[in-house]
Image 1: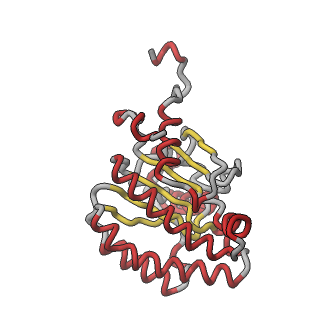
Image 2: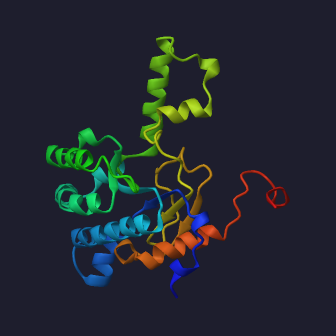
Image 3: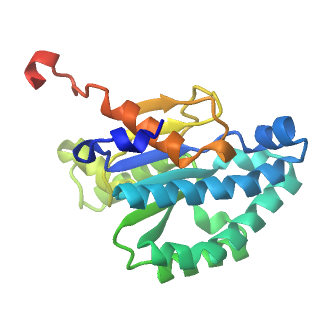
Length: 247
């Protein structure tokens, strides 16, 4: 079944966020190899969802790439992940430019190893004119960290008289979030059969549709992505209203 054939162009989400999970389990259980091999194969899935997002005309794609909690993994795995990040970002720049993809990041990337940070900044500069898709990598990111940092900035501006506490609204808070320059995700996908949000975009996914699949990330194909989009298109998004009000 080709799920893409059933998609309704007018009902495509503008922003899809993905918790990419299952690289290590895929490598160990299905391939009998170490976890880092799974991360290498997961890069192919990143390329796949990037390409299909451009193909479908989805303008924003955000991928949970490395959380603040991931630093607690074995040091060798973390080191390998950081090296893989630097190599992959540099290697994929031509593909990103060719497909009109602008690379973006959220998270405290300044705390990444210098080589990884430098390659990311170079790639962001080289792809800044991409106008078909904004691909955001959440790196050294956690939603609670992001919200905490936003509150610090609000408090600092309030102390300077730039913001009056009584005038702070949800829209105000949004402008202090790292995702202030993009719409909130309408669809959040998590692979590998886990049913958790894992501290990802907690403010932004307030009204997102959640889609969970048992497919491990390296096996997440264009068909699986389109299947998730089709599932999204069959849901009724009421935003507090009744079905009758939407009719």
